[in-house]
Image (cartoon, rainbow, N blue to C red; front, side, top):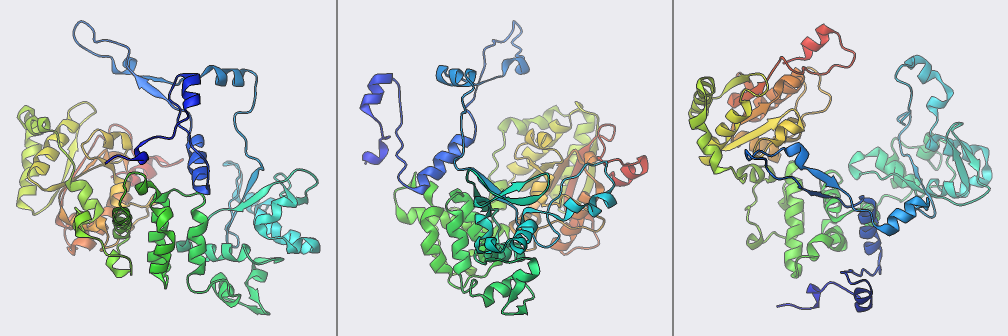
Length: 513
């Protein structure tokens, strides 16, 4: 059945005047402004197209073939020629930093002496610390909240001081903080409600008593009661965040903040969390189920289950995954090209030897570590595709990863190793991956029959050891590498080794696999 919801709003007068399709959007609420604002600022539209034909031999020059073009209309061209402003924010908005004591950011020259940097006067200054100082120096400013300070003061970057404003106007906005950040989040709650404080310690003081944390200070002031701060957090995020971000924030609140009235939060914020689904689905029940499924996937990635929270039940009719982890669904539903299953017949002698030995280890299920070595262009990716197709055709899970995104993109279902294994960006000896035993990643690794890591020669050995430590932990097998899984590394040590900034030859070798 079709009704007016299938018809794009239009204006007959404009259609006739310009003889082209023009969609009409009416900004009637903050939601429309949010979507239009994000749409405008995401950048101009581009088109890619091909203008070359194959040569006499049927070959195509792919580099020459690809054209990335942008259409500039005559009005825009004229506007740019005359130097008119294309966009503006009125009034201007100043982003106000939020940080705990001595944890603010400070930019300095890389060649500078760190001792001199730390001892400099400006190193200890930030907008927040100078806000406290301005309250101390100007008693009349103590009735102004931190977020409203730019309306009465101007920030001088070079001197790092707040100076009384004499003209124009500016809005201030404190950077957002997630409830999972703990003290930083509660500091933001206090700054949004408490006036005239002159230091962090003064902010912790309530009725002459110095509290041990910002949360305790907020509780004594009555700012943190039940779920009101969590409700305010979601309400504020609704003004600028997209529905997918709101769902992620909701999942974070459920896991880290332990709200008392979960169902109340759900009922109050379901509508903004489902804006995108309501555009394509007409049934309210279906929309609610789609939001629940999305949040369940996020909770699973955090090692939690949605049934632990008092949310509406997920209807089996809308759940094709039957509660399976999102990571497992992604890997088990990767479609392999039928032509890849025929690649095994084209392997050369060395490729065939590696192919047979690795797949024999997968078939036995007793694990093993292999390294496929070879310069670029010798057929490593050809071998990977053949193995992945063979394993996946049998209904098993094969995880394809690579150190670099480019290498991962040329393998079916490829992901970067840091994304798939949750490897920390900074790894020390003895580190582990940042996933829990109950998370979807852990479940996926337990079910995997083959783990493939290309360009392993480029990664630091600490990253590989982190995966090894985590695999032994989740598999419960400490005396076998990677918990007894079949792991295949690939790469070429004649190419790029791990990058160690200003590292000596010994340091680079120490970081190498």
